[in-house]
Amino acid sequence: MKSLGFDKPLYILPFDHRGSFQKKMFGWDGILSPQQTDEIAAAKRVIYDAFKAAVQSGVPRVKAGILVDEQFGAAILRDAAREGYSTSCPAEKSGQDEFDFEYGEDFAAHLEAFEPTFCKVLVRYNPEGDRSLNRLQSARLKRLSQYLHANDTRSRFMFELLVPAERAQLDQVKGDKRLYDLKLRPLLMAQAIEQLQDAGVEPDVWKIEGLGLHEDCERIVAAARQDGRTRVGCIVLGRGEDDQKVREWLTVAAAVPGFIGFAVGRTSFWDPLVDWRAKKIPREAAVAEIARRYREFVEIFETHKKIVPA
Image (cartoon, rainbow, N blue to C red; front, side, top):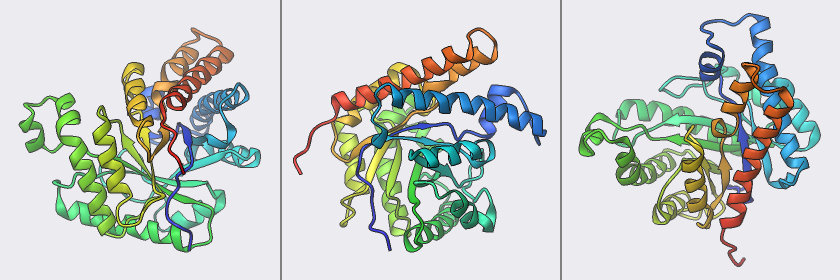
């Protein structure tokens, strides 16, 4: 059984978006034709080329990684593995509120075919939400957790935790989602982590919605590392926020021991990719701009992280 946790620096460029990418970037619904699938895969190749360009221009290879889906990024996953990059691959069905496996009972076979460095799940879990839904999700996630830790696969467990507000919680802040993020979400996230741990769900890395206060980041690390989980790491996700907000989140998190990096996707790639598809800029300009944004996020985190004695 592998030891629990991953605490090395981890700077991920995620582009595992599937349903949202298909709909919002391309405007397509329903089942895709092979040509449409290839077109989305080609767009994702732009992002991957930007990642490689960023590494070539100074982002430390040992700290860099990609997160991409099998549906549109199988060739990218294989290439990245050959090149020795850290890879992450999602296991969840895209675009639904209830966690379930993308490939059902075949989830293990798909993981073993690609052997990503991390198996990632995106889960919407509010500790004050629907109890039966939380129990159902926890049972599925415990199964995956046990599989990843018990089997001799290279994949570790990355858990992207989203805590959408319940109606009563929004009412407490008069419908102000920014106030919910600041006042209520940090404690709810810590409670969610504890509930999931109690249910037997043991991520190596928690992928966390950004936090504005140092003490809230400390609260999350304390929850993630409680009861001997001393090597479990936390990374900040971008949530599609604007550049300034992501910079604030990275600056705050970097100074907190236990936050080891980030996974910022849409803020890095969305606008350059839209401009390329609209023929406003050439492909090489889109690659260069995505690489620049990703590299700057790495520089922000590296600049502000606290050096903690071993």
